Amino acid sequence: MLSHSLLSNGGLHADDREENDFYATEPAAADLLNKAERLGMIWECACGQGHLSKRFDRLGFHVFSSDKINRGFGVTLDFLEANEFTTNDNSLFEFPFGYYDIVTNPPYRLAHKFIEKGNDLIHYGGKLCLFLKLTFLESAGRDDLFKRYPVSRIHVCRKRIKCAKNGDFSKVSSSPTCYAWFVWEKGYTGPTIIDRV
Image (cartoon, rainbow, N blue to C red):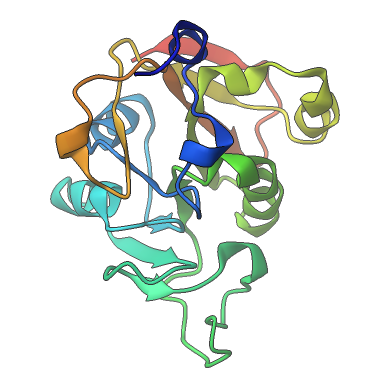
């Protein structure tokens, strides 16, 4: 049984976390982002088993899916080491489009690196959309990150979205955690907009 403090904090003890921080996202999260943002072609760069990618594909988007670890879906590609033309085995592939929006639920412990890399890769007008715990806004340790990369919009999920360790949703009946889509739009200079979706 999880402790009260653990449940109220919406987290897991380090020993209970999946080794590579793989927590699949309930596909309903894609529906919420689709309602809140106008997206172009999508690069899902931590696609896991394809839960978000498949939903975006059904919604009519052109989706390129990749992950550092091969889980049977997408191209094997380490996003943090990627340029537009290399895979993990250093073979070349032609990136399918030059303008894309990066959309993913990153490994939480690497979220700051995904923010830096994603903002570096997106083109002017492009978007980086990361599905993160709302508490990612906390911590004085992230002050510099948010100064360098101000968030354009934060879409707070009104209903609790489930994330499942190793993609096994049969073991997740509900979520103790509030999530939001954090959106960085390159070239946007206005204030951060917060809404509920």
